[in-house]
Amino acid sequence: MDEQLVITALGDDRPGIVDELSNALFKHKLNIEDSRMSVLGGEFAVLLLVGGPEQAIDDFIADVAGLEESLNMKIMVKLTRSAAKHSTMVTYTVKVVAMDNPGIVHNLASFFSSRQINIVDLNTERYAAAHTATPMFAVNMNISVPAEIPLNQLREEFINMCDELNLDASMSSLDSGGGLTND
Image 1 (cartoon, rainbow, N blue to C red):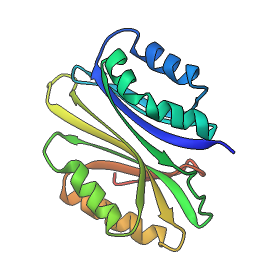
Image 2 (cartoon, one colour):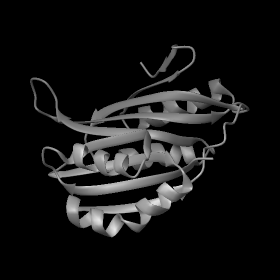
Image 3 (cartoon, helix red, strand yellow):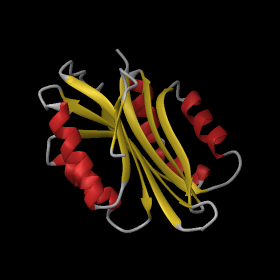
C-alpha cells in the first residue's frame, strides 16, 4: 500500500525550480498527488502531497539534506494519511474583497473557527484598484461546513460581520453553484 508525504519547500525564485524538484520526486518513484506552488516576494514556495511505496518515501526522507543543498531550497517533510471523508460536511466557497487593512484574514478565520467550520483552502492577493490605485485585498477560500449548521443563520451572521468590517463578500455552495451575498 502506498504511503503519503507532505513536502514544503522554499527557495529563491528562478526558472527550472519546478523541473528540478519534480525530477527529484520522479527519481524516487514518488507521485505528486496534490500541489500548491506560488511566488511570494522573491521566494518560490511549494506545498506538495506525494504518494509512493513506503521504501521510496523513506529513501526520499533520507535524501532531504542533499536535496536541500542541490536545489538550494529549505525542505520540510511530514508523513500523513488520507483525509477522512465526512459525509456530514458541505463545502462552500467564500470570496471577500475589501480595501487592504490588517486583520481581514484573522477576522474571517476567527468567524469560521468559532463555529467549528474548517477552512480547507485559502488564497489571498493584494492589488491596486483600477483608476484609484487604492490597495485592495481579496480572499478566496473553501470551507467545510457541518451539515447540522443552519445555513440561513450562518449566512446572516456572516453578512453582518462582513457589513461591520466593510467587506464585500459572497458564500456559495460548491455543489449547487448558488450564491449567498451581502449585496
